[in-house]
Image 1: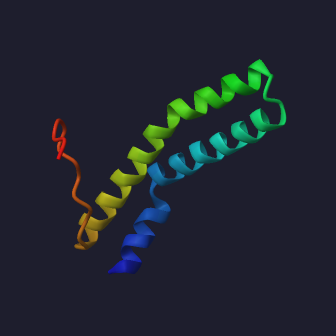
Image 2: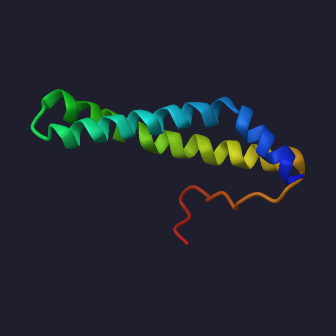
Length: 84
């Protein structure tokens, strides 16, 4: 079953989109490190940081869906408003 979970994740569009966003972040970070005074570089890095929570959420949702479709246990999704 673990193979089916991995296969589901590898073909997931959310995983690909999240991977693209992570690569965009890494590129923006590298450009900002090369030119820390560059306004365009810093703006690109800020934009990439804004997209990062969405990328993480997409990965978690893809993992949860792949696990549930294969019968594997999933992580316990947080309940909104629950601070415990």
